[in-house]
Length: 209
Image 1 (cartoon, one colour):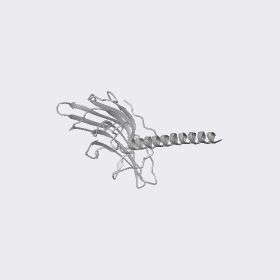
Image 2: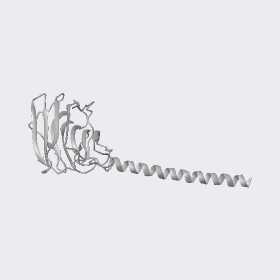
Image 3: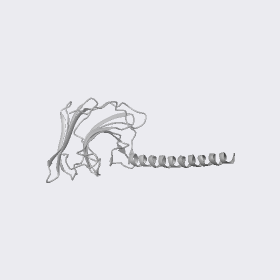
Image 4: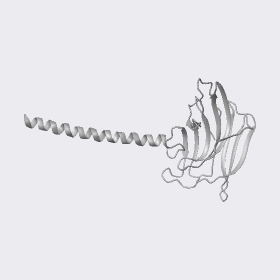
């Protein structure tokens, strides 16, 4: 009887040690996931709490300086009015996945104070987004956008965004030092007042071309 009791105590001790090891491993994985999702505001990895979409690179493990342009077209979604302020954007970009640089252009679709707001914009981090006031964006408009490397020697880029429906557009060149490691097609809940915003329900958005 005493030997059986000792055997049971040994098995219980082993099971307890296994449980502790499993608990420690689970806590480590949870902390790793938290770090990946929350502490990467500029997408320095493949997971991000604010972005969803598609990224291309020469190599996802060791990307090379190969990206020279990105382009797409999409239809501005109607987001409707929300009881709380809600925001969404669709954009194309170069950078932001493997480094802190990002050059991007897109459209914004927001519900603020019970009204819908739509706009076009561009952004070159670390500078803040610049709204393109000459373009009157509406839900249902067909947008065509591109970002292209004009001169690699001077790091000159061209940003184009055109509203096919209204016949209004924006074109400007910028000098920007980009490592050219990745290109993205993204829908996002933007950062507003230094906090990730409530996501407006944009329904379905498809990048083409």
